[in-house]
Length: 367
Image (cartoon, rainbow, N blue to C red; front, side, top):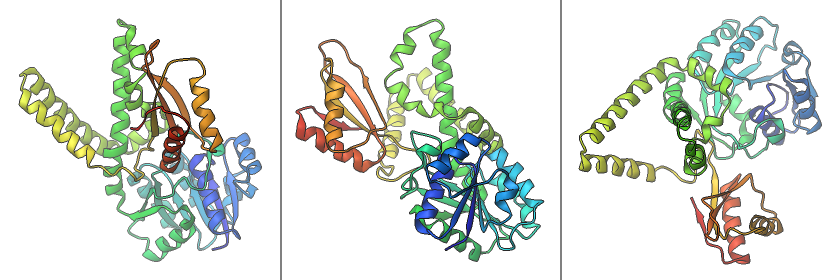
């Protein structure tokens, strides 16, 4: 494949797609646009893009492939802008948004002009954000969902797949409605639940200040997705309104059920409730990327003394193993604590575990 690719929005996803396309199709020209001129300049300096465009119109007019890597509300506006432009006859447009039904309906303004649009959602992310965090392996073995409108034939889908071949992702073609239901259940709802748990703890902390200190361990881990972009999730929830309202009604019924079991002290039923949840959860795939980026955490039992963190990180540095995050949890004076080290990949975590074992006697556990 050769041609001109125009990427609108140079964050982690847009930047990583640029790297993947350039790797697989070195003859292609990658042009980028971002509302932040500093971000656009950085993308150029890092070699993520070949050319910079100062306007959407300038970059879109000669593009063979246009990728909309912007918040879903902004994507709607850009699609309207593109529908009013003179684009190349066989241009292909796709997006990377987390909701698809509304975007697909909006794509009619493009389809009516003979412009091909295929919705897309790469289910991949990172602990870091921004174009500087872009990496060519971001989508490797991750699910990448495509939601072509009914008016788009398979030939165009195959054409897009060729452009995106360098992602090494697992592509699935489904309907926009099915996408929004699946994403709502395993991505959007968990973000709502995480945010609500944080709000509840915050309310309690007004009277009980210890809540904040005690929440530094497991609570912080299970609510980590509440740290996601507020503006992004505002738009996603509005776009996927109908699906999420139905899911939240179901969730409320589920919580009412648990409330009733607790209220009536139905011990056997409570046991069965958690046993069923454990069975289902333990049966989930462990070595696959899902809708929510995973932590590859390694837990190390270490004594609480000065220099222990630098000691462990020194071992990893000797083996050129990169880490993404590090912290100590549940440490008390003269008692072993737990050092939690996060890695970008499962491979790095396995290497780190072997490395620490070879240099020390510290026990390690994969969470």
